[in-house]
Length: 518
Length: 75
Image (cartoon, rainbow over the protein chains, first blue to last red):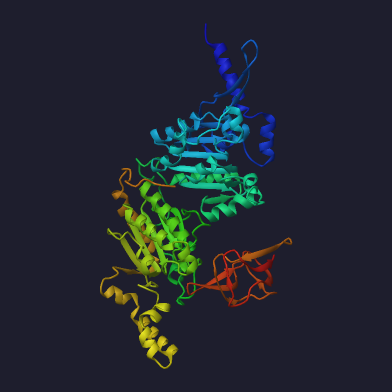
C-alpha cells in the first residue's frame, strides 16, 4: 500500500501549472522577445534553487466523472530561492495567464510572498509584467460586481507593497508592459530596473487615448520617460542584464534591517594613490570635470554600482565598497547645472539617504555644490521645499558619514554636505572653495552702494571681486579651524578606507527609527 | 532621421556659450561640439560618437531648454 495515485495526481497538477497559459500563449511571450515567468525565475535565482509555494493553486476544470481535465494556474508564481547563496523571496507575474491581471489571480499568493519576506526577513524580488495582479475592467463581469480598491479583505497587498521597504530589500523588475498595481509595485522598490523594450505607466495607451494623447507604449512609459522621471531607477537592454542588476544591488545589502551589510574580501590596496586625482579638477573655476572617474578611482576597483543615473542628474548615487565594506556613495556631477541641487536632485538624495539609513550603510559624499538651483523654473519646482526635505533626510541619518569637499560648497545646499547635528569626518581637497554665496552676483548684492557710487561700475566690481578672491583661499578658513582638514586628493582612497574601518564597528543591526517611503 | 545621424540634445536648460565644432567639423567621441553656460559654469556638450557635425541648430547666446536639439552628427 502506498499513495502513488495521489502522488501521480499531484505531479499531474504541477505539470499543468508548469504549462502556464498554454503553448500558444508561451509562444506569444517568446515571440515578443520575453521570457516566461518560470524562465525568469530560473535565470534570476541561483541555478535550481527555486522552491515554489502554491504551484497548483489555480482554476481547475473537471469532467463529468469529476476527474481533472485541466488546471490553469494562478498568474502569480512565488516561492523561495537563493541569490549568491543567500535566501530570498521571488514573486512573479505570469503574463501568459490572462495578461497577469486580477481575473486570474489568487490574491493571497502575492500577499503571502510579501509576508514571507517580512516575517522571515528575506529580500523580495518582484518580477513584474502586466497589471501586477491588479484588476481589469473585465473583472466587473467575471465577478459580477465592482471592486473597491483596498476594500474589505483587499488592503493587505497595498499595505505590504510599501510597508516592506522598512523591513527587507525590495527589488522591482519591470519586464514587458507594466501598469496599475504592477507599476505601483515596481516603483515601490528600493531598486527598480526595466528593460529598454518594456514600458511602465499608471494606465496604458488605450486609456490615455481618451485624453486625446495618441502615444505608443514606449512613448508613454518607455525607459527614456521613466528613468528620467525617476519612477524607475535603471534601464538595461536584456532581461538577463536586469537579473544581473538585481543580484548586484542585493550584494551590497543585508537580508533585512535586522542584519548588517555583508563585508566581502577586497584585493584592492586601501593605500592605492591615483596620480590622476592630483590634476582632476581644472584650475579654471568655470570649467567642469567628470566626477565618475573620480568615484571609480577612490572606491574598491569595479565596485561602484550606480542607481538612477538619468534622474536628478546633478547628483550621482550608487553603492560601492571600501576595503570590502559596502557604502552608500553620492557625488556631485558638475556637468548638470554645475552640480546645483535641483528639486529632482533633492528628491533623489532623500530616497538614497533613506536607503542608506534603512540598511545601515555608511555614507560617503563627494561634494561639489554651488548651491541650490536658482531661477524662476527652480522656484516653480519648489526647489527649497525639496531642498529642506533633503537636509532633513541627511540630518535624520544615524549611519557614519564622511564628506570630501571636492570643489564648491556654497549656500544652504553647500551647508548640507554632512549631517549638521553630529560629528562626521570631513576633508577638503586643495581645489575646495566655499562661501555663503558665490562671488558672482553676490558682490552686486552685498556691495550695491559701493558699486552705485563708483564712476566706473565694472571696474569697481572687478576690484571688489579681486579683493575677495584673495581672501577666499581655503587655507585662510583652515587657520581658524572652520574647516578641519585640507588634503592631497591622492590620499582620498586611503582616508575613505580608514573611514570604512572606523565605521564598521559602529554599525548596529537594529532597525532604524526611520520608516522608509518609496 | 536618416540612418547614422544622431541628434544631440541639451541635457540641461542653459545658454549656448560657444560653438566649438561648426558644421562640417570632424569630432572624436567625447569631443565637445559646443559649450553651454549654466550656473556660471561652462558645460561642454560632448559628441556621443565620432563623426562629422552636420548641422548646428542653435546660435551662440541663445537660451535652450532641456531636451532641445542642438546639433546633428553623422557617424
